Length: 149
Image (cartoon, rainbow, N blue to C red; front, side):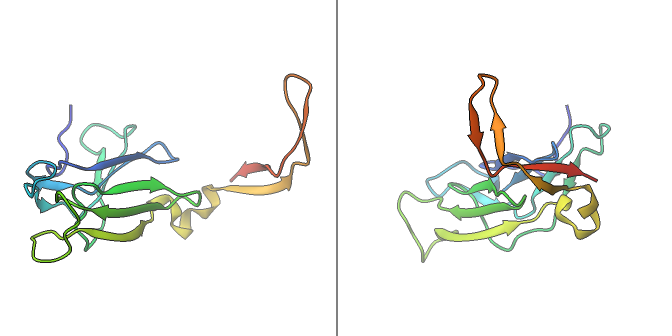
C-alpha cells in the first residue's frame, strides 16, 4: 500500500484513456456537507498503477478554484477532463461563507494531450461506410479506423 502525496476527502477519481487515474477536487480536512470541509486540495494527482512503488503518484499544477463537496469531473471526447461545481452547504450559498457555492466549469488537460506526444495518439486514416455484424445484418456507420503512431 502506498501513501498519497496529501490527504484528501470528497475527491473525484477518473480512469483516463491511457490507464492512469486522475484524483481531483476535494478537501484536506473535514467531512462532506454541513460546512465541515476545510483546506481545499487544489492540486490534482495522477496515479500511474504500472510505475514502480514510490513513483506512482505525481502532483499536477493546482487550480485556483476550491472544489469540495458536490464537485464533479467527467472525461470529454477530446481527452480533456471537465471539472465543475462545489457546494458544501445545505442550500446554494454564494456569499458570506468560507467556501461559497461554485457553479463554474474548468478543463483539465492531462499530459497525454501535450503536443510533443501527438505522434502517440490515434489518427483517422479512412472512413467506414458499411459494417456487418456477427448476425449478418449490415449497418451504415460514421465510425472510423484508427492508426496509432
